[in-house]
Amino acid sequence: MSIGKIIIKFRKQFNLTQAELCENINKQFHTELNKSMISKWENGKSNPSLDYAKILALYFNVSLDDILGLKISAESLSLDEANLIIRYRSLNSEGKEKLQDQAELLSSSPLYKNNRSTCVVEEAE
Image 1 (tube, one colour):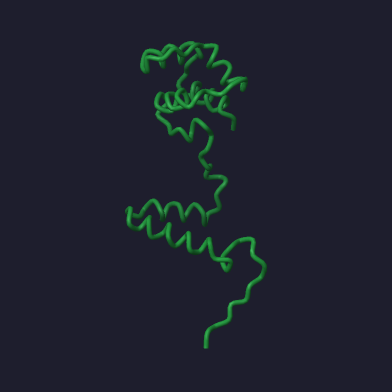
Image 2 (tube, helix red, strand yellow; image 1 turned 90 degrees about the vertical axis):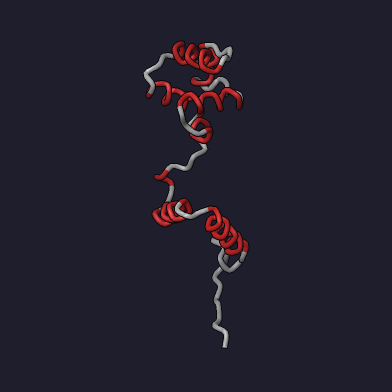
């Protein structure tokens, strides 16, 4: 989804016109945003600067990834991938670090790469 469509989605969730969004952001963040800028963003004629993208994220109480459309949607994940994320999030920082180390080891090994040709692993005698 484009940044413009995402801004429209959040603005409509808050039941705001472009002018109201502009006025609210200017009051809250002391900016000089104008309705024309919001219109250009929503119509895909330009994109907000990083500073304005951060302000939009703060205003709508979402992440910058949400505003920029960078989040992976749950629909795009397999059940196994979603379960891995859930397990990762349940770990403390030490566990997360260990899991990342293991993932790095596995992903750097030709034996476990997804695009490998068929490999036969023989059992050691």
